[in-house]
Image (cartoon, protein in one colour):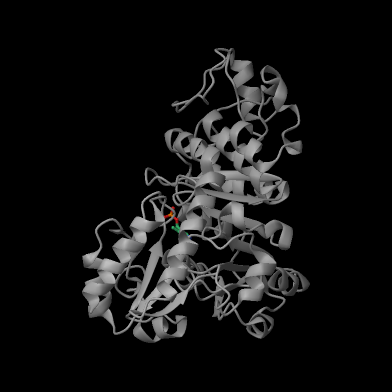
Length: 408
Ligand SMILES: *Cc1c(COP(=O)(O)O)cnc(C)c1O
């Protein structure tokens, strides 16, 4: 099943979506309008598809005739989500998955073989680090974890056996950046493919494929849904990568997304630019306020000139992102006191939501790591990660001020 809409003939303006600006692609891109002419995209909540004849069934299974067979392989609502995201990213092909982790697993494991080598930045989302550090070696894939901000470390780690490099940027929760362009050049010289987890930047704020990456991965659970409702993921890359590796893996192993979740995420894409823009504006106000507060020891925010890699932020990102990480004076006790004193901002380890969410990485998302490993990543006991939502910035600042006062 191709990811191109099959019946765009019923939708005359769909003939050249590549010519549209991103906002238009996100509202109309990929629409497969049915014979009923519905305005909103249809939810095809179906497992299977009926055939006109036994001959037609045979032709579909032989790939001699286009059309759907079974929703583990493809589904029209899922196709709409994939095509809309593909148009936004400017990729040749896209496949959706049940979760962000299914996307990471499918992207890497569909491509790597026993005997291969993968190099990854060690500042990875916890489960991504598990895939590289624990799972890959069990299947004979050697893994090296390095400091992703250090180009010399990438050069030293990548060898002719390296088939893939993998990193997220900005990284959770310290918001360190990896130089996508420079690392892609180093990787490509050795013949390795570059896989980027682009969740924190969102497709609005960072364009990894244009910077040289080969595969972009999303947890659509975050900003693409953006309202905390369902899980989802996506992998984008060349048609060849998707045809030769990813599609077969998804079809045969089944990390397929539910059409219902794909429909929610498809509708989420319509408002993605508006939400991300508003969240970034809020995050900037919150970050600047926290940086000027004497109860705050440190603020890490890509949108501020005091970010350690401010030049790289300007070169590689189109906006600041909506996550602000900051440290209170003291440790766990002070951080907990702050979290427990918040009213509007909720304690939750999710991010990208309309609701502002706060988490204490050392005891939640990164508690699996040994203290030395946390220290290596710069995660301290006083560190707090704040995902800024869509509330009024003044209310958020008021909530933080009240909570900081409670810390003492
Ligand atoms: C949330 C997240 C994931 C995993 O996504 P799920 O949808 O929760 O499976 C992977 N990478 C990053 C950076 C994330 O924030």
